[in-house]
Length: 431
Figure 1 (cartoon, rainbow, N blue to C red):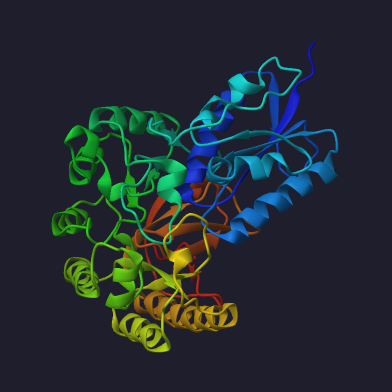
Figure 2: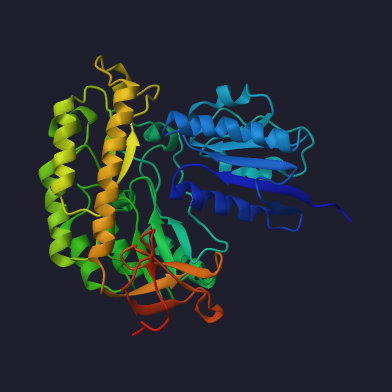
């Protein structure tokens, strides 16, 4: 009897990467491999990399070293965006056996099958194919890749180089994948991609059309959006979310700066007035919606006055919290040539300031939902003595473990939080 090879996966970066790692891992469910945790001794380690920041690349290199320490004889494969952009650099790292970019990574099983000499993949061009993906496993939510690539050319971003042009399947093909997700007993999907609002462009279809079609998928009970660009978050999308119970009242808007001058320098396709209009429209239709905002701090040329302009706008806007990203220099981007960089110390101070603002916003949002009648999707597995879950509008809740609730959706009322701001449901508040 042939001994199974042990294979371990680790994902860096976004929900899109998680969906792709999970789909790639399913290639190894053929009885020849045993999947183990990345901290365990394995024959093969696979790292799905990220190139958005220098810290993500540094973390990738650290994971390579960790794998080799765990098993010096292991074969380490690095796939994904960092591999796409810096293949030669990765190949020079001691212990890295195989480097696959964003096209060849979906052929990982073919690359590894039956080989004693681990091949060096051919140099890859820009990815142009669309490969659907979704995450599976013990989670109650599946990250569902509906789109890939980006046609925007923002001055700070390497993603168009790493992932190629915007592309997606047809609505009909995407619905078939959604039906496969339902067959794996997921109650909720999170729609992911690089720029999901751009869905359907190659086929003359629209993101709005996809959302309408997804609401008709039997067994799919919750649909949650990931990041949608302000210029693509049209009013008719917001109204559809407001009018359909399956669509969760949760929006993630990549603002990136609250200064119009900085937005122009970044090459963004909107101004702050449009962003505020989107927030006001959401609040008019969905008063309790969660509105998360992405912001880049310390972009080259961002003056102190422009930073304060951003902070003031975010303080006044009716948003729920802020994802704060400290600007990171990326090779081959326009921003790196800006002659007025913000010092690392100044970037750090600004990031800390906005993270404090985010904490204030989040606390206010959570407490502002006290008394709300909503529903929670409980996770399948307990953590300690509790089940944890998320409300429709992305507020965390917990309840004493009850086996019958695991993986179920429960109607309830939010009344009491613990010291960390998680709503505690005692089982007697159900509707």
